[in-house]
Amino acid sequence: MKKISLALTSLALALSATTAIAACDPGERVVKFSHVTGGTTHPKVVAANSFAERVNKEMNGKLCVEVFPNSTLFGDSKELEALLLGDVQLLAPSLSKFGSYTDKYGVFDLPFIFKDMDHAIRFTKTKEGKALLTEMDDYAGFVGLGYWMSGMKYFSAKKPLLVPSDAKGMKFRVQTSDVAKQMIAAMGASPQAMAFSEVYGALQTGVVDGQENTWSNIYTQKFYEVQDSTTDTNHQLLAYLFMTSSEFLKSLSPEDRAQFTQIADEVTQEANLSVKAAEEENRQNIIKAGGKINTLTPAQRQEWVNTMKPVWQQFESYIGKDLIDAAAGA
Image 1 (cartoon, rainbow, N blue to C red):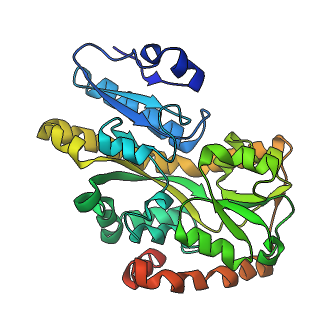
Image 2: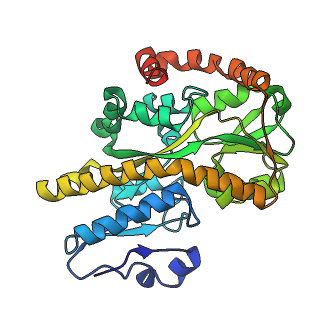
């Protein structure tokens, strides 16, 4: 029985690609899973490894999943192209990355649309949420296998942020999401889109003054080391689209495809249930490591909501009012 193959570092990959991917048995079809997250405790890392372990055990002799974390195979800017070219078969990018393919995924980026992760998970199980998994199939060839929750987002910056106006004039790293850019603009700040792997250096050198992320990303990437503090805004969801290409799925036999997608669904449900515990653990890890966390009064939180709620109206015609209402009311 093979073991899961993990390309743990770029150095290992550079030294010997064969060594990094040598765990598959002869005759098995290799399925490469590339993602940009590092560490061992991040929800995406745990879910990716769990999926690989299950496929490699339950579909032994047929498929062999190799996991390449921390941008060791492809980074943010290249992974979708690599999927279309067949250089990789599985990805788990942020839902914020699909603005050039569909506006509808912007519903996940709307600030304060979800009260918490449980609310977001309920939406993904609705008919509207399920329909979004195949939203890009016809014209991009991308197929979602599930939504992997990573947690709610929090702002960190070079100074404490207690109300939105505290961010005025500052530069914030965001993903390539028009919704996120408008949210930052509503605070009187400037959005700067950049790859995830570049964020720590940008914060350290002052290229940007702040960023937004989950507790797990803030801790595993050590953003708290180069920021004054993080504010418990709980303002936005970070979720990933666990995805493949329709070409890859169609290349599997009906029996193998059914087994593969069933494992994907089961791993997704299990992973999402464990996220809340992982997020709380990493919040405490930040505090233990010396990071500072600012809590908000009810009045301060309401000021954040009032400042950002108009972003919903800005994107209503693109995302669709019915979809926004379905998400908010899930």
